Length: 274
Image (cartoon, rainbow, N blue to C red; front, side, top):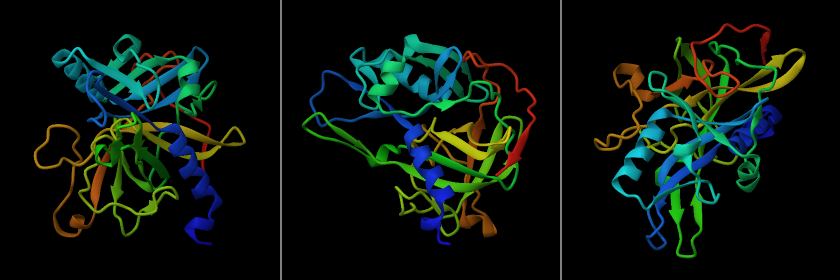
């Protein structure tokens, strides 16, 4: 069976793309086309409502932009102006996680699929060599037009867990091995600038309580740095055989609570890898 014929791979890829959404900001007084800054986010459904998740350094970058220019507005994909600062629930600088509240109406407007975590949180601890699907929206793949529309190209792949620590998950990105997503069949080269993917979802799938489920276990913490930019950074191992792949760091989100607040990680049970 080829990758394109693999229903599990295709389902994972399609879901991950629908879960991830661009989180952008721009100067509302500027004419179109214009620069669209920002990153990626995703959404989890709990008993209290919808919790948005992104990287903490994304929020810091947005705050810096607003401080420098009061005309900056935030949008979630094609939503109306979104008060990101006022929606923040919690931030964890150590793990680089931030959570924010999102109304159901906004999710409907941006056609986002929130992962249902009710009664099944925290997520399982990833283990090698489980497969994780990741997705984000690189800044280099964004296009704005004079008609006030924009296109957000997505990057995504299915890669195996290499290592897990208390805070991080490590995966390797090797274009010769990693499985591309059906909606992004051409994998970028090593060192590709993935700035803008920060905050993107990291999903694992398997069986829990007898049901096949998808779980958000982390977020993309950063992307390769391009010519000294201070934005996203991947740790890239470039010695010997390691020069053939990039090491990608993902941040675990199991220290979130169902109300969006953040605490220390908790233990989990009842998971069978798929």
